[in-house]
Image (cartoon, rainbow, N blue to C red):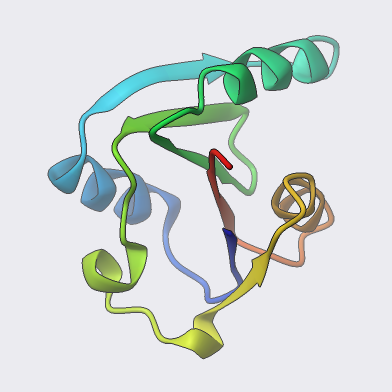
Length: 106
């Protein structure tokens, strides 16, 4: 189940807080031309990891383990949406309807 963060949070705070709890395995940087190819590689390496995609940041972040963002950030159920659709977190962030998407392997 993927989590789509709708509550505003500073991207730097989100990233640095997550890094305190999980090791950053890899940063996938992309541009408008390479985004789809980089996204495929990112998703291929998601197994047993937590993926993060944030608004206005041209990176996909891969963290070790499965992050419990509710504990780490003290989020409540009204701060995010859940989705089984792996593409929905990316779409919501790209449309500006979400601050970040947390994606997990299925």
